[in-house]
Image (cartoon, rainbow, N blue to C red; front, side, top):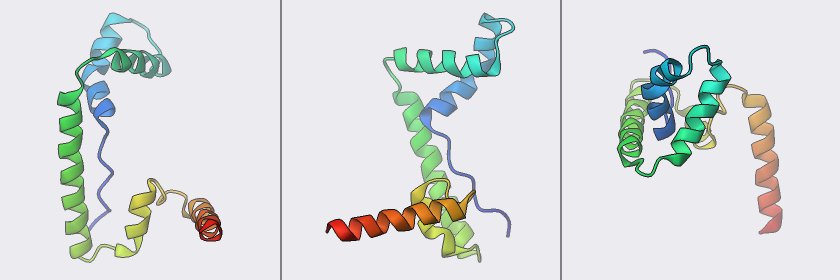
Length: 110
């Protein structure tokens, strides 16, 4: 069918994408890294983030529906465990080794 759906953006990233151009206008010649830093400061200073958190929750719902559709249409469900671990799909060897050692440590402590 195609590639697995991409993970949804966080509320912060949705907000940052909406204000990035404004930050560039307010700070001519600002570097890309400085935009992110400035955005982080602005985000932390914001009192009401509910609008962006609601958009992120909606994006997450859409993502979960898309993943279900993807898996129902012959997408690999072998990556089901990777979904819970974050970005395991990009570097599976490193992530899996770490996850395996974490699992072993948990079993020993039980």
